[in-house]
Length: 143
Image (cartoon, rainbow, N blue to C red; front, side, top):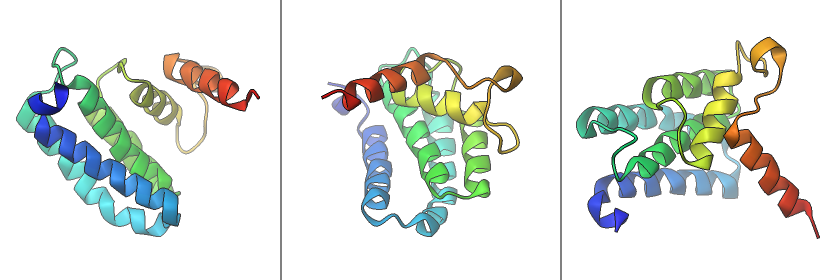
């Protein structure tokens, strides 16, 4: 099982998920900023120590970890959080991630330029992550 092959990575991802869940329950945007340095350090340590790559069996966990750390920063609602999220994704997420969450985060965050949304020529992002997200939203909205 993937859990037994990458227990530390899985535990780190679960902790980050708990932070996001606590935010969903409390909506404490200001409180999320205190996690920025830890999230950045966590991604740096994991990337530096594990020599991560898309070929590793635990690459999906790594993608979720980095994208969840990015989401913590964005959920703060601050311009600094968005900027830090973009930098985190540029530094630690490889091109064309495989997991839907990582695809969506990468496409949306990396399409923002100077705080303005839009991809090339101002067009909205339209990669596989965004398409999967829109399809899921359409299905969720159907009775």
